[in-house]
Image (cartoon, rainbow, N blue to C red; front, top):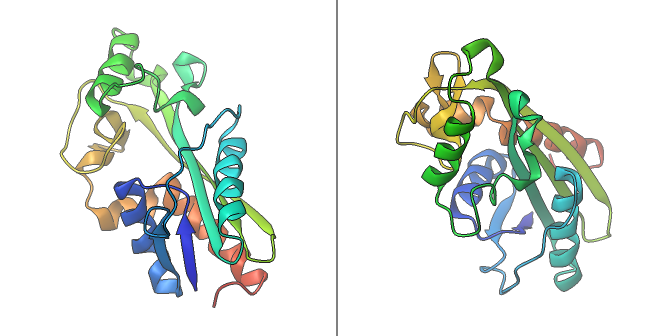
Length: 198
């Protein structure tokens, strides 16, 4: 079954393909589907933002399955910031390193026990008949004290799961424990229940 990801993010596309292709989905990016659209994400939750993206693409490709996700980092000490503003947290043109550095600066002097955090991912699936299926996944961890590792993207170098940062894990390891993997596992169970997947 062909599905369009409401994004052109190469990292997200790679992760989704690795997890969904064994289940019979052929995942393509919105640009591969011929869509050039930047959707304004003005929701206040991950679910709202992912649904805004999914509906925008589904409106242009009503005969296709559409998948959209919105994900981010919640740091308990920062009252769950950056949350839905994870990508824009250090300013509009900030790099991943800028965003990581901002979090590290805000947690300067804060002991490990108070650095608890989680990655959150909300995924929306819209079928050609317009049915919306939603799944949320999380990955619990804590914010480290420096950037570690060269794999991954976003806040992966400062997000610790056990003794390793998310950026130190192989893609296979990450795809077992990540928030996106958790959400996709839940989504695929729901898709099976609705007979959209084998």
